[in-house]
Image (cartoon, rainbow, N blue to C red; front, side, top):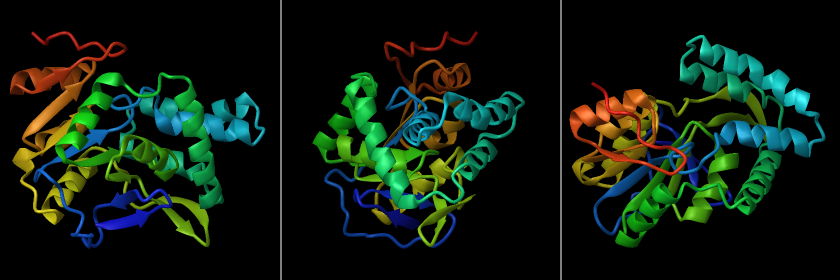
Length: 255
């Protein structure tokens, strides 16, 4: 697995290049716990929340955020695949300093923490339980290092694997290696398990969206979080655990 190691010691990764890894990072239980991030572990959509924060920090008016994100939301409403939306999002950062984005990410995270409403308590508690057991905890997200590094540091996650922006001479090109969406998350989980000699049947995964179904199906203990009706119906048919949260009640049972 190709990895980008950041100052926080977490990792963002793609899964379709080489598969080298640090095999001395063992687990105490022989199991891993994989967490989707946005609306699974934290309440906001981190990429958009961070973008608004970053633009405001640069002194941009709110209209700049609206101008940049409206085409993305429109494309999503028209059914453009999430992986393509993910690619288009990172084009907004072409020419940005990777180091400055990392600094902005830490400032964004600190600001979000002060609200007291960033983490979803139910899944944050599950993550803490996995850490207490000695499971290898991995965050999997279409977000990127600016958002994931401080979250991984705060929660104690072992790795954070996100969409990896292409960086040349310290600047983002606007391209990415592989959007960490859908199938890519499942592939990443399988590679992590293989590299650490873990039995996928002993692992757990948490996700809130039907694009996470492949990830959840790749482990022995899948947990569907929140109210996505397609994911909820799939979880009910297959007997998966369904975890409600105060802001995200369970989806109604499918007929």
